[in-house]
Picture 1 (cartoon, helix red, strand yellow):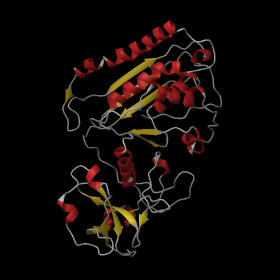
Picture 2 (tube, rainbow, N blue to C red; picture 1 turned 90 degrees about the vertical axis):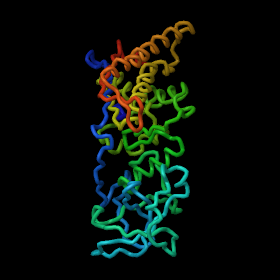
Picture 3 (spheres, rainbow, N blue to C red; picture 1 turned 120 degrees about the vertical axis):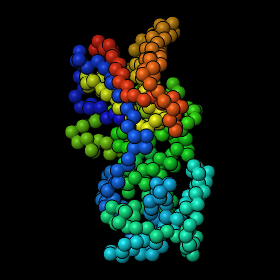
Picture 4 (cartoon, one colour; picture 1 turned 180 degrees about the vertical axis):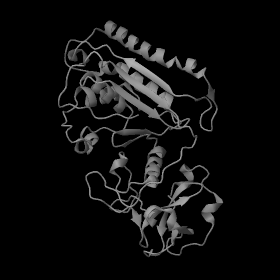
Amino acid sequence: PSSLPPSYNRPRIPSPKATGVDFVVSTPRRHRPRVQTPTMSGSTPRGGARSSVGGTTAGARVFVRDAKYAWLPAVIVSDISQDARYANVALALPDDWERYTYDPNDESLTKGGIDATTGGVVRKVKLKEYPGRELPLQNLDEKGLTMGKSDMADLPNLHEAAFLYNLRDRHKRSVPYTRVGDIVVAMNPYQWVDGLYTERNKKLYGERLVWNAQEEDMSNRKEVLQGYFERVLQDPHVYESSAHAYRGLAVDGRNQAILVSGESGAGKTETVKIVMSHLATLEDTCNTGDERLNPRESQMKMAVHESVVKKVSESNPLFEAFGNAKTVRNDNSSRFGKFTKLHFDLEDRASAK
């Protein structure tokens, strides 16, 4: 899901044309999409100076490519000269490697000599396989511990390996959502996470990102995004996407679109259901101090909202009739793209609040 912090500097009543939120659900044509090689010559972390992403000195903790695991953490054994073609590294697997890694004991992990200093298996890697002929650095804090971020745009070293290991760290802690700037990345936990989709959470995101959202001068979008989510003290969640879409529709008067994309079994269909459910009930999270509906009227209103979400959700079997298939990660995978459009009836701005 992707959404942007709304423009608050000139709120206006929605025009008659701005009435909807579009959902586009797509699956890459290839089951395992080709990952582009990242540029690792340098990166600019948010709010910081440009930092080098490549490691060349002995003792530097880096990542090296692997045919089975994509990337493995390692330590450079000896300094790498400027004209070197190869580098010697010692693998340095995390302590929780066996517990949180699928098929963790591949024989390739034990091939090679043992480094006397680190005790890791030594590998000789070709530097020409890495952009800039530099090995990508790990993200470490002041104590030398692996750095994890809820917003990966805040990682000092931005590259594919850093992204993957940051997601791995959050996934093992059953934290399915991670942010990349104003994009929300969802990792299917393949289990129900208690407390993630409670009514309290729905209300919390509605209050902070819609009803009580602070005004932001969007003339410099980059500066606004730097620390925006830290200011609202909000953890990454798909409710961000629905809350920002509702705010942009109700206050800015602009149609909104949410794109949900990922591999088979990533959780696209469930994500759309969660977002639509939040959109349908966001109005009820507002607490303006006005006279509220009596319990019976409130119950009837909630039933209408739930009916809308139920109707859209129950349309899935009709779509599936066009063709579903079993994949490696999903026994009933949608083999088609889906476009869903929700219309909201908003008489005036006061009605939104």
